Length: 298
Image 1 (tube, one colour):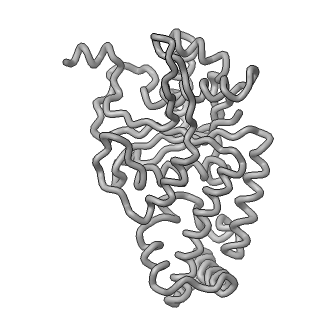
Image 2 (cartoon, rainbow, N blue to C red; image 1 turned 90 degrees about the vertical axis):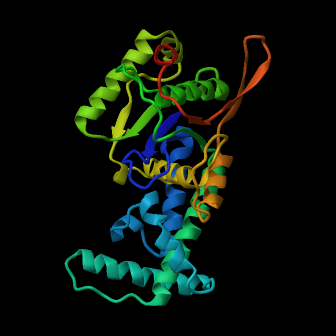
Image 3 (spheres, rainbow, N blue to C red; image 1 turned 180 degrees about the vertical axis):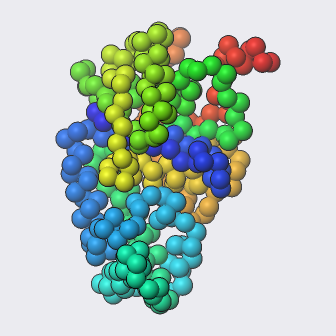
């Protein structure tokens, strides 16, 4: 099982929350999903976005002005929309290659906005078709942070859920964690924290039976699955609100967030009394400190 991980909102700019998100997909389904996403790009835009200097990222595709442009005109006929959208993208490509600034028409802006919305909807539907499961730790931006160098709670929460999902999937299933590459020093810190967690804590040692403690790092702009996690993290950040989450959403993002939330991993585990308790793949974390630090600070 492959667990691709990315984040949203950690730059502490406009985002309401910090979201550490992941998708789980079985290796037998991964290439099919990648091909389906690329075919959907060609069908809707007439091109592959990366060939036209457009990033497959939430903050690029789902910014507010894309929705404003989409609403400038009524829904367009599909073939006309694709033709106008391709013209829009070709102008941007020529400009990025050093060409003169080119005027875009109202019709081209509307066609691009409507195409983006259609594309994101279809990509999230493809996730369901290819049995993708979603996990996320949503963190309050003012959450008290831990003082120690141990693995943060939002990471350990995900690894716990990865472990449960592998257990549920099959008796022998193993998980490989794949991160968007960070600065090399930050990658090394994360690797060390993961090794410490999986090798030196009780819960970590148990979970290392299912999750390989050393992660892989990839370039997000070259890895479709990480780009997909970025989209999902962005949608959850701006459109999903669990209990105790009070920050406003963007109404136009909520339908995408609902689709992403519908992909959430849901399981059950026995509680201390032996009764079944639900296990959710998405959670809200108000305090990142371990219990010992919370008690010491209270």
